[in-house]
Amino acid sequence: MPGSPPTKRRLAALALASVVVTGTTILLGHQLGLDAPADVTTTSTRPVEEPTQLADVDTSTFTLNRDAFCDRVSTEAISRALGQAATEMTTWAPGEPLPESQQVGNEFGCAWSVGPVGARAWVFAPPITPSRAGDFTDEAIGQGCSRVSRAPALGSPSLTQQCSTEAGPGTTSVYGLVGDAWVGCEVSRANKTSNKTGQVERVGEWCVAALEALRVT
Image (cartoon, helix red, strand yellow):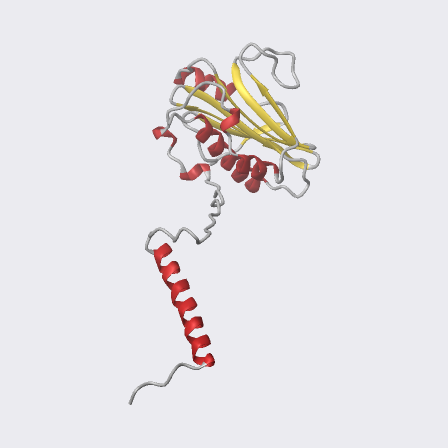
């Protein structure tokens, strides 16, 4: 028996089925890595950068540049270290005064801040020997600061210290020798609810971001 001519309802159903099949084909094409048709608009979303803990990084495999690196530091990492986007940035180079000091430094460094909260990172310009780095770790403990035991190491030798204020943990700093590069990173937070463990984890993540910016690629 010959088929009857399609009605308007059947034509609409066929058209809908065609759209569904076409959409499914495009979706499968994306999943299989095939090119989408020219008239199909596609969008891409930049993946969110996930933080990495210093304890999860093998710094012995790193080779670092001892030069200006501030423009290579991840914006996302800066915001995580500060808790929000930075509003101020300062950079310095060998032969220039260090921030908040008249002392002339021999390092490349940068600092970001928002209000009283700040994050810094720096690297000495000259190469440093393990023996001299050992002296640094002994000399670095400042007044009102104490060494943090069992903290993740930033190369070897390494030192993590925390300087407290009446409001609680103030500035947490990590120093270490990675290859022949003496690196420092710190995060300061004027926050009464800050705790020692959280501060150490935060500055560890910040140190990893600094290392990635300094790393030879």
